[in-house]
Length: 299
Image (cartoon, rainbow, N blue to C red; front, side, top):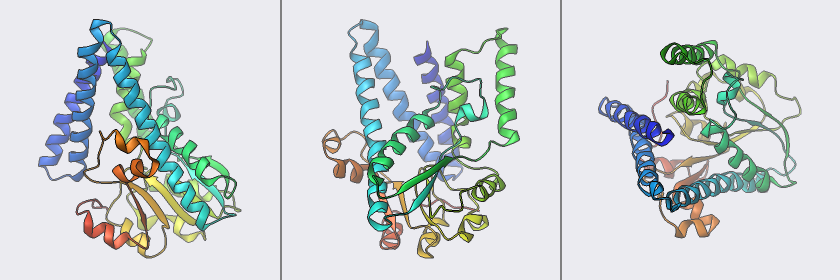
């Protein structure tokens, strides 16, 4: 049942992405590709699993293991590079807003972003070793609008079904629908408030979530700290921020990445190079020139 619901959701997401892509929205293509890949995975699971052979489960388990390894590798690479360049730094890590941050009643295993963060964070700590101390892990406070959206979705489900208890499958659908909003700070003041609360002894900020769109309005730049991160979405102002020294290093997804190369998973460097770019002041111009459209337009 859950597989069928997810297939329907993926199909709807693909149509939505296609519509946005036709409207000229850059991230529409990304949504379309992700949803198509998800549909293929779910369809494979649906076909193989009814026979009771467990083949479908083994395929999905393998894909989950590979994805987890990829996320850990991204965090470890960033950590290793930062440890080399800034030994002795004291870091604050900024994570995404999780679904359960917005709705404490939700089960903890419904949010794919939480799983992604956990793997990245584990890799980051491995890479940093004892060279850089992590002082704290923090996240922006959810907006009132986002909390209201989830309450509306829960109320709608209860009215539609007559059930007071919301099943795990419905929470998973809600989390999927709101994922893009959870990973982008919609209210710049929420991010700036977070920066004000950071320990004064911090000399480094590591983002394991996306930057707000309004980069030029961040009070983070006023602090004398090293800024680095792993982001899933970048805008047109990021290269300039790197060139001006505001951002020291970023790990970002490579366009036209290899998602199905088994050989790439056998080696950490190949694993990283197959899907990711490590961007610094030394190569930012080269990355921009070689990857047209990589940096989306920002405000």
